[in-house]
Image (cartoon, rainbow, N blue to C red; front, side, top):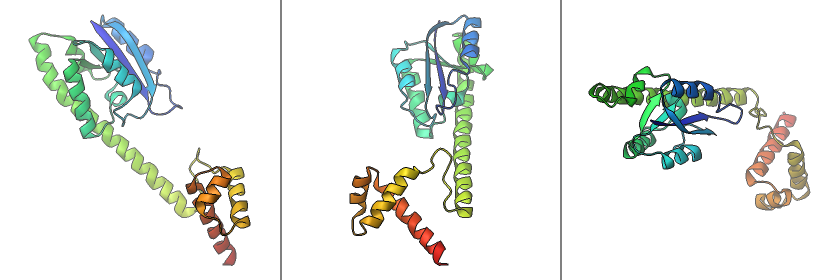
Length: 213
């Protein structure tokens, strides 16, 4: 029985292959023939993922899609999750999740296996929903934390997104030197986006207001 292993991590700082050995060991112990291992660093909220789509394109009817956990496969919205389930159904793929033991019977084609398929569909839907809600809560917590930091310090920028000091200084010099130039003109001269010019202008305005107090 052929199994296609799918591994995913959200960011480049995380290791998408972290669980590879564990999933390969599970496949070996289950007697599966591993047809391919598909690994990528991409958000689970996106349906269109190169490696996942590649796996689905080459898998044959009756093959197994093997993942470590549901959240590695999906943190999708309800509509995108429904679409992915539809694709799996059309491809006649059986989803087995290492950390969801009831799905292990998906390889069983007997009546018992068919009954478990119905139960697993409900469990997988529930787990997928929980993964999506967990993602939404995480994003909301990050937003709230960033909003609180900005309220305490208007000049604060998120880690990894600090301003390019040299570029900002260049934009500021152009704004001072060419006070009548448009934002678009300044952006072209500085080789940056107009959003950066607006941020620099706001920074100058805020600084001037603080100095005048």
